[in-house]
Amino acid sequence: MMKISEIRVGRYPPALYLELDKPLIYVVKGMAEKWVRHCPLVDAEGVLRGMVSIRDVVNFLGGGDLFEKYVGGRDLYRALREVHASQISYKPPYVTLDDDFSEVVEIMLERRVGALAVVDGDMKLRGVISERHIVSLFSDVKTYVKVKELMNTPLISLPPEASIVEGQRVMTRHRIRRVPLVSNGALKGIVTVKDIVKFYASEDTLSLLERGEVERVHGTPMSYIASRPVYTVEPHEDVGDAIAVMRRHGIGSLVVVEDGKPVGMFSERDVVTKLPMIKGVEIFVDEAEKRIVAGRVAF
Image 1: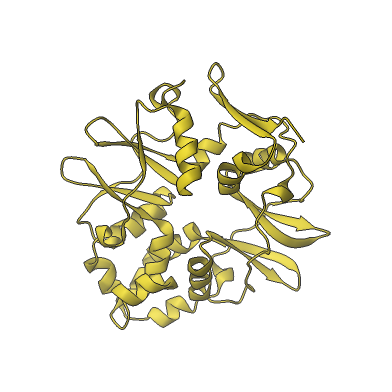
Image 2: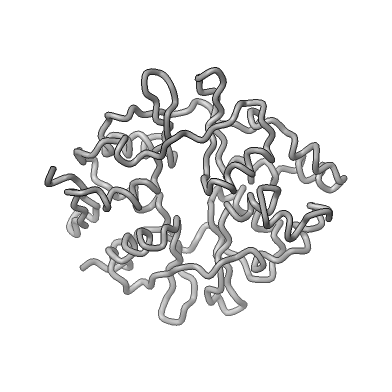
């Protein structure tokens, strides 16, 4: 079997990592600047100690229980500077450079996580492997699996005028990373957790928070930070073709549209966690080509 160190899938070193005692504002700014969803935390010797997920950051900024726990009636700007990254971190699953590549997919499937830390024999952080890295290795072939077999329904959406804090609460409540904006059945944009963190990390927003204008920030319409155009796929299309579209545009999801109406979401996570569970589908690593080959071999 091929070792992780041989295929070198992932990012080495990680685009973003911080020491445990760094204030959370460094995580927010770092995620926005590096455009990543995870921030590994290390001690002074570089040993892996935790991981902060962008979903927990969105929760902290107003989406749910972390906001209530660490901010509540306090000043959000002050909380960002006083709460340490370690306080909202989790113990991350990890792999070593000597592990087989197949273990990466197995752990992501079992733990349903979007990223794994890569460490050496001394538990020092060396890299990060994410769903994006895994999906990028899939061969450009037909899988004979349709998008509708993996997509998430019903579609969770909001109107363009919904506030950013409403979007954060929806994302936190449903554990999703993207919310399409829909008006009268038509797609008007899409907002991701990355878009939200980038908004909070901007100098304009931080200035408002420093002046105590949290309600004004939270009340900003989702349409203000929405991405356009919104890339779509139809339910009957092959998963391999959908992966190719995401890869071509450098995105992690597609809105599923049927008869001109948005009906669901299809994402990288669906590929990593659901495709292996489809009856008759086999997935294997082509060691010579360093690619993942997946497809339905029995119907």
